[in-house]
Length: 58
Image (cartoon, rainbow, N blue to C red):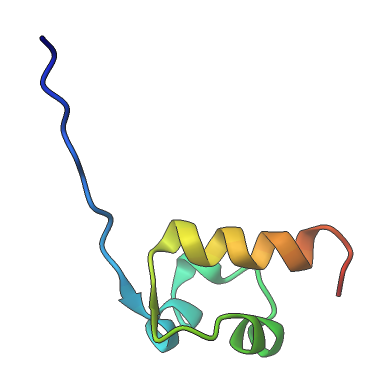
């Protein structure tokens, strides 16, 4: 039987993520509008922004 590890990613306040290097490639004005929750993981925030910004939606 294999032991499965469950790791929970750390969430960060949206404002902190907007100022972070992790999201520096995104335009902050658009990111601020798209990230409406009070906190995200880096992966969630990037996925949300990629969904809209990288596909030419904006």
